[in-house]
Image: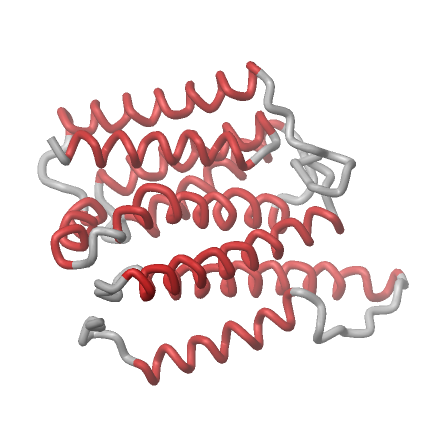
Length: 265
C-alpha cells in the first residue's frame, strides 16, 4: 500500500486532536453550566451558535479525513475493507451529530428517527428529488454553452480519478454527496436558521447556503462559483420542501452519477 507523499502526518495528527476536542464539545461531554435566566439568554444563544460552528468544523474535518482515506493507494482487498469500515464509522458519527441536534431542536420538523418525524417516502417527495436533479442538470448544460473553460472542481476530480485508486469514484459519486448533504443542508439549517421565519428569511437562508456550497466547490470566485451556488440553492430547496435529507441526497447523487457516466464515455 502506497500513501500519497503530500500527506503530512503531523498535520493529520493535529487535525485529529482538534476533531476529538471539538467533538467532545459539540456532543455535550464538555458541559457548561448555563442557568435558565433572562440575564443569560443572549449568552446561551451565542453559545448555541458557537457549538453549531464547532459541529460544522468537526464534520468538515471528518469529511476531510474520509477524503484522505480514499486517496490511499490500497491494492489489497483487506486495506479496501479497512477504508470502507472507517468511512462507515465516521459517516455514522457525522449523521449522529446531525440527528442529536434534531432531537434537541426541530422546529422545521425535519426527519428525525425518534418516532416524532419518520421519513415520508411519498410520490411528491420523490418528484421533488427528481425535479431538483433535473434543474441541476439543466444548469450545468447551460453553463457548458455559456462559460468557457473548465471548473477547478471538475479539473481536480479528473486528476484524482487518474492519480488515485479507482475506489475514489465511490467517494466522488456516493459518499461525498452524503457528507455534503449532512453538513451543508442538515447541520447548517438546524443550527443557523433553526426556526422557520418569513419568506424573506427563507430566501436569505437558501441564498447563503448555496453561496457557501458554491465557494467551497469553486473558491476562485468566477462564473462557476455562481453555477455551484445555484446548484447548492436547488438542493437546499429540495431539503426544505421535503424535510428529509434523503431527497436532496438523491438529487445530488443523481447529478454526480450522471456527470461520471457522461465523462466516462
